[in-house]
Length: 195
Image (cartoon, rainbow, N blue to C red; front, side):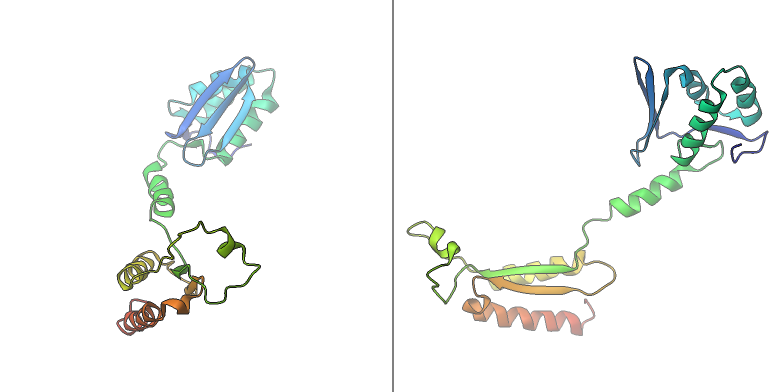
C-alpha cells in the first residue's frame, strides 16, 4: 500500500501547512510549494498526522472510512510531496540542502561591459542615436568601474562551464583605453588563478 512498515511512526512534515474552505482542503510544503488537494472529509486524517502515529493505527483509522481509496491516494500524494515523513526524518538536512541551492548568491557565466554608448558610425537609420534628447552627453565607463565589474564577476561566476565577457556599447573601441586596460586586468586575474 505505502512504503511504511506497519509499526513505523510517521508524521506531517514541519514544513506542512494545511488550509481549508467549503468542501476542499490543501496541504502545502512551504519549501517546495508543492500542494496536495483533497476532500474536506479527509482533513481529520491529515490533522491526526501532526503527531507521530504508527502506520498500523492509521490503517485502522482508514478502515472506518467510506472513501478508503481516496484516503490511500491522499497519503500517497503526501508522501510524494514530502509532506508525510517518517518520525525520525531529519528535516534540517533537507532545509540545508534547499538553502545551499537557493541562498548561495548569484552565479553568472557571462558579463556584458557597456564601455560607452558612443558610436563612431552616425548611421542615418539608427534609432538609438535618433532617440537621444538634444544636449545628451554620451557616457563612458571608467577603468575603476570596469575592474570592479570584473572583480564582482569573479566572485559570482558560476562554478563550472565556460565564462564570457562581452565588450558592448555603442562602439566599445570608442573607449579604447578602458578596453585595453580591462583586457590587461583580465589577463592578470587569469595569471593569478582567479579565472
